[in-house]
Image (cartoon, rainbow, N blue to C red; front, side, top):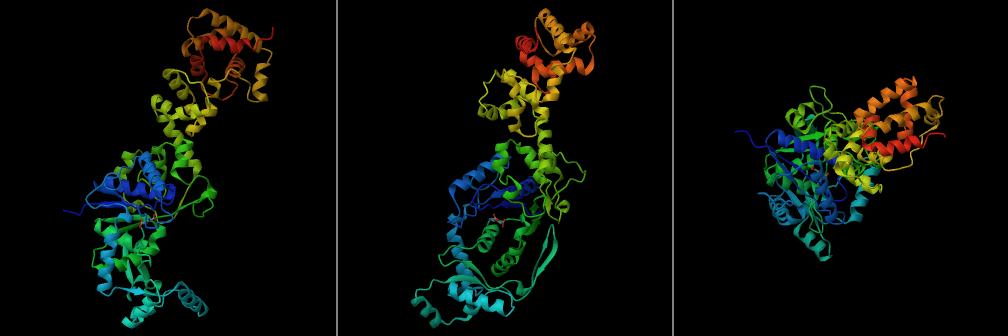
Length: 479
Ligand code: GLU
């Protein structure tokens, strides 16, 4: 039997869920679902100063919003818990002691000033900047003297003298020479473990089979390998996925616009659009298709199609994709999704069936849910004005008045105004006035909506109803 796939997403709760981290979470989740594996959520909160419960909550909330459910982790528990690093300090302590005992780690008493001086010296000599390892060989007496001085030691890992290598599922064979790292700190003076140590203890104890994370962590991997080797643990598979860059090819940051999942949610991107878009940052489907449902992403995922080169975040493409998903959303759900925006705009909301018709009528021109505010405004105001001079010109055409008179006469004759009866009316108006094409349709469109390219007129008219249409056309009649 092959080993069960167990992957993890390990955010540090120091802010909102960043779009790059969301992409990492998505790839892990998709790979887990693709392989019938387990998706673990682990909160890496050992940086006590920067971590907060508020951030943890918001990250969990954003993951849920994206639809990424975790099989083990905070709030759901699991066999390998606890799943917050701050609750696992005893475990780190146990393995620190083991490494001290086996001679793979040692106490280092160097002060920040001494380390700084060492660094300066190395820089001046053009040597690589790394810890000299001078506390490796302290005698018992020297240690006691430092202790007596009140120095609090850190624990350092002896960095191996052989090259360290591993095969990355994305990048292939990678090897790091001994001089790429010095002895590194695994436990700080205050007893808190560092990332490179805690991550190994957790990935090992949680039986993680694949470590899938951003390429910015490649340089950390040799240190982590050193810890695995020292403990005699098997290595997981590693897959370092390409970084996400802005259009200017610098690392994605606030300068490029919204960077956190919650900001995208607020602007009205749909979770399924964001999942689709982010999955394609560094991965592609064999079919070349771009619109891929979560189900298809899960079916088709394969590390061999993860790219080695960085991915460019193209917000135009995201907008296009989101528009596709908005148009595919059924009116009932779309109405529900648009409701907060319409409420925020202060619109007096109609009954549910009318609301559904309104959002369906404007969905075509929406790229984000927040667009509904501007697009649907005409349904919530009595003041319909031509959007520009070109539109206004249609109201003043020579033939316009007779079109409007005829329209009102026809309107008087029907009981209910709907898309069908409206089309019939327009046909009769055309016949009666002899006006055709743009000169027939545009004046009516502008009088009713103010826009030359708005939502489809029959749909608008049906929502407006007879009275409102009558009033709007009447107001353009010059007596
Ligand atoms: N807490 C680390 C981060 O957010 C996790 C890195 C890893 O996946 O190993 O970058």
